[in-house]
Length: 158
Length: 158
DNA sequence: TTTAACGTTTACGTACACGTGAAGGTTCGT
DNA sequence: ACGAACCTTCACGTGTACGTAAACGTTAAA
Image 1 (cartoon, protein in one colour):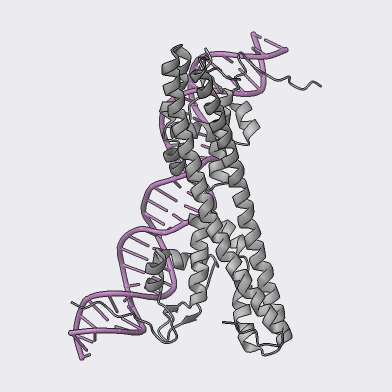
Image 2 (cartoon, rainbow over the protein chains, first blue to last red; image 1 turned 135 degrees about the horizontal axis):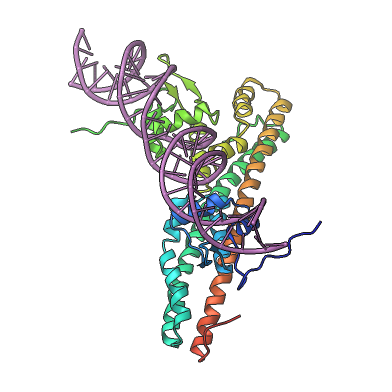
């Protein structure tokens, strides 16, 4: 028996099932995200197959992280990434121009968007950290009770 | 016109709407959380009104944080807090015993549960931080492109 | 004492985030 | 040329997290 070799069509583009397997998603979810405008594949084959490049994969991985790890809803994610159109246009525009000034503008725009994403994540982390502080506070109180009990007290600590 | 004075019945217990307003929840949600076994009110009035004490409020605030800030599902939260029965029993047991050894056991049990909660939160933070790292990576690449462009390059950085 | 505001349970409705399936056609690798 | 994988559109199913309404009891204030 043979193991299928890396399909690797054309310029390293992947078909939907390949992407799904790699990321642990279903093809249905990926198409659904596309319906919601969260991403669009870099290209279509002659026959209209969705073809994803590495930046698409990154983006999907990011989306999955936002959902599974950060717990954002798809609505929030589409806010956070409300720039898919801009991204697509950047991709087009960047490759269709040689003018360094235009390219610079495109990159600066991307920077702004990505910086906004980083800020939102850091906000979330801050909120989680304040929850950890609250939990640590409870831990401290419990430890004081324990100390009180071990010192012969009643364990009713203020 | 007069502003209603703080209701403050009996021993500082609050009715469901008071709790809901204070925490920014609906009464429906609070009852729903109770259905799921996430919490039970400290007491009921003669007329069967739910009455909440400050530890209930803390717990509800924690649940809300887990949902809104940490993005846990109610199922995950009930896992995380799968100890509501233990908590209720602790509350009862602690006040119904004077024996320091028994009280110690109860406090040690609570400590274990709260420590588990802290660990789960820190795990979540770690995952978010790795997402931030990924985003920072993208930022770096974009910055390198920018530098390349500003140095007269094409902006096509490997 | 009355009445408005608030509470109770029971039960059905709904928006979101998909999953599942079907029909009918296209494309790709061998 | 074959089958597997893909495409589109349509539609219905599912679990979660509540919303909303009905019918009725409770409580606080006038």
